[in-house]
Length: 52
Image (cartoon, rainbow, N blue to C red):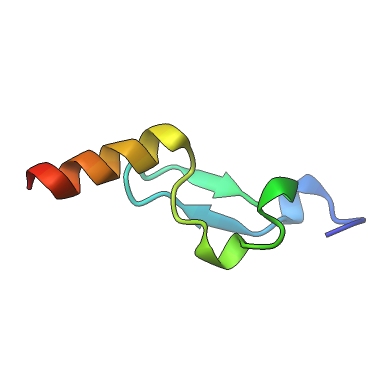
């Protein structure tokens, strides 16, 4: 993703909060498996699955 402007980076929508989030360098190797925008949303989804 070198040389790509921030507004042209790939985006996904978080299924928990509904906010769009952009590609980050730390997700470079596993962007296809990234689902949640943050640890907070991941934890919220996990707690919803366990309780419901």
